[in-house]
Image (cartoon, rainbow, N blue to C red):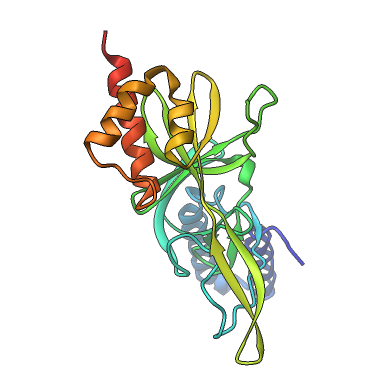
Length: 248
């Protein structure tokens, strides 16, 4: 059952207070003050980050030794990063980004519970040098882009976003059922208020049609190959387009 983590702190405080209140005698004022001082230190320490821990307990995967891959971005271990959550910026924060469920997970600094943050309250987050923002589906977007987290691969007059996702598939290995976690990235160029899905050379030339001739020449001259590394080719294409488009 999921529950709000801050409630743990609340009931802990009540239990501690009740336990020691029964011991109060005229000669136990020192003990009372010590308890009050300890609680005051704890509350002050939590004050800055308590708002961040307002999530629900994360439902972890039952990963097995024979499973292939993992459901997270970069690695299955905590990664240090930053989060812009409900109007506030927090750093450093230990983060897991679940690519199967598109969820940002943090570890509670005191209880060690894994907490699933409320996606709608996350404006952006970073993991290592990777910067993610939350995009929201709008009926005016053509084509429509699903609401969720996207990595910013190029952030200029035009933008390139990567939708990092993984699928979880059932398989059999050594006569035992296992899970396969396979990544499937999607890329979008954002230009003039519209999103264009891109992956191949043809799709990029179509999205950036107003400088198609210059871009085509640039890709050929610099031997940019989409089949070899389409993500790098996409970044180079968008960056070149931006530079050409800024020229008078």
